Image: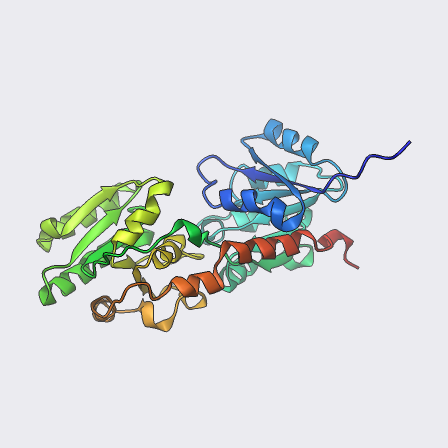
Length: 328
């Protein structure tokens, strides 16, 4: 009797509700790029994890924890993964603002994935013993630039700001920059795309907006659906990014792909991704960058460095490496 052909290796992609926004393009593209079967599982507890492990049960199969965030660290500690390869992608918040990276049982993890050299250094500081058992990979994020089409009516006076209205995103700095710009040219406007936040940052922003008499120069566009973000970015002449830290900054890449110019606070790690010409440290520097903005300057930079195909190729190469436990 002829033996049935062996199936491809399987990757169970483990997701948390509300923290699954970075994964759809990877999940959709990896089968073609890697030759693996890939299936997403939303995991809230042991029963969900057991379902994923039953699907990816053979030697050579793998599980990918997307975020090092509860309940994932506990589930990793409590689970016998048998012959499966265990992978964890770490984002900024787990290493910088919580103890989750430090408290994860890395002895049970073959591969940790981060998106920048800065984040790799932060993970090593948070978990000094991680490299004794776990391989640490830097895989740059990727953007499907085909979804972003630059506008033919570029507006240099429309400034976009995108993110949660929280202290780390530093929205008050955007008001200071807007105020400085309007002293030179009152045509400048700030469009805010925000999906939630905290009361302190929101109240402070509104207070300062009134204090600076900027009510007529700020428009709140609210939460914008993922499929509508390319058009929102394309309508802006410049994306102003004031965050105190990002592991990558998807909104920056999206804005550049949509033809907007960039003005990025020089936060730690920003130089890994964004050119000197768009990074600022002072209000005066930011105003000068915005005043000299031009359309469609950085799309090629994103296509060259942060394309989705490049990310998929890197993850595919990672998947097809020998797992860490098999390395002599």
